[in-house]
Image (tube, rainbow, N blue to C red; front, side, top):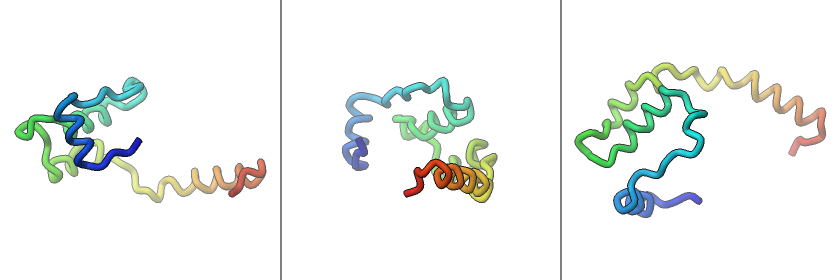
Length: 84
């Protein structure tokens, strides 16, 4: 379920940060990035500028690197009749 900002903030303030499901499947870098984003203490929470400098963001490949994968999936869908 997608929550509006106000509702999500209320739930986090009253119930704490929800635990990530299957967090062991996430890279340590992503887990650290999320912990920096989700700090309830404003003094400890990273600013947007700081988050943009986080290694998770700065080490990301350009979206163009996904093009071969998209082509591969589209070709597979055509061959299997799953094209929509």
